[in-house]
Length: 100
Image 1: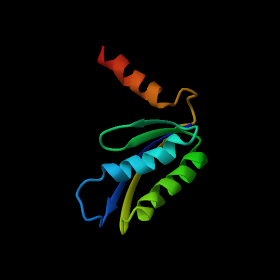
Image 2: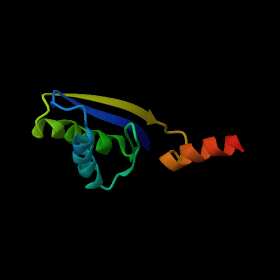
Image 3: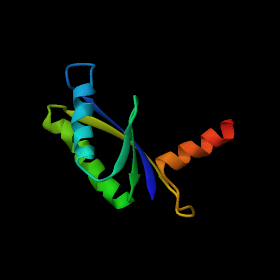
Image 4: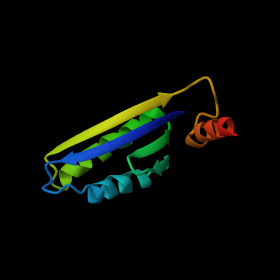
């Protein structure tokens, strides 16, 4: 299973606010069966990497349909195959255990 961090930033929108665009791409993601977590600086997605990448492509395209003239997408992929519990929750749990 892959854990992916994603940040999509529309440019050339005429406003410094991006929350409307974030909501638009988030709706696309929420229309899938993928597990995700919205954060203040991006979104974390877990699941099959091919499925995630296909959804990211749709998410990347969406701001253009809303008037953005440029879109910058940052993707960070953690694809760990030696551990069956490679998930958002598992990664968080590992760090929390070390903080005790």
